[in-house]
Image (cartoon, rainbow, N blue to C red; front, side, top):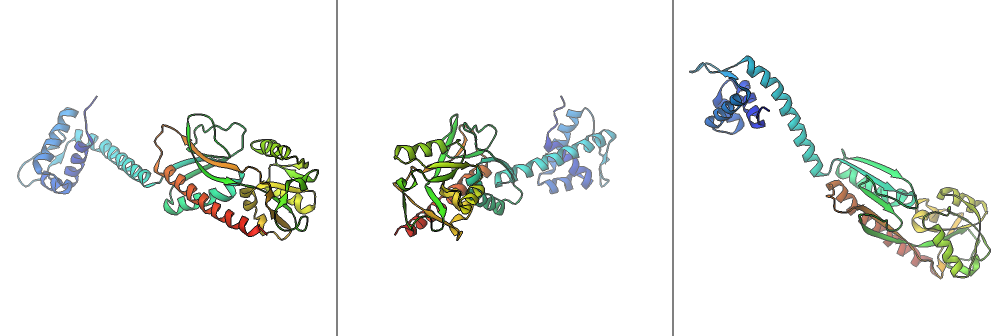
Length: 307
């Protein structure tokens, strides 16, 4: 294998462009002897002269072998420059990030994260995938949002507790909290029996209240349309309610539950033992900050809803 170094090719290109070793040295910030040494090393590597040196004031002339080396050398130097540029962009936060998410996070937390990443790094490549499997796997994702901890070789940060609240038609219940026993036998619309839904419904049973599920859908907007139509109320976590802007809908009322159901926990996961990219590190920071802002807003809303 030919032992050619990039610095040798850079010296070759500089001498060819400038026509002299001295001017090439000035351009590169080297001494003339250093440039001469690099050209000599290149000639040993390729097995022949790359310049004819007439001496005196006459410019050096590139040889046929030098032309071959220079042609391919410039391609290598250009690729190296692109590589350096790409590394600099990566370290600055540009690059690709793959994030797994689910409906509530997609509607409330993730838009904040994406907007802030775009503002900081307009050229970043953000790829999102949304699903809610019972047994999520981080796989090739850089980050994964999920309502609970996931198994496997992962690290996580808890973003927030997401309280369950009652969404009912305006006037269905008096203002203020609603007791769980008031929902015993009452019609409700609900998510399918995946993720935390079975656990939430079991919490109703343990409290001695058994609402009657009359419709199931994984789409939050669909559930709230059924609430508006009078089919039943819905017990949803705050992120789902906020993501649909139900708290501002004059046809609906959001009530706390008494006693309250255990809140679902929202986590952000990433693979353990792996070096995170600067973009992933910033995404985690933005997610934590966005969740803290949402938690403050939740506390204010719940305080305002108390009689």
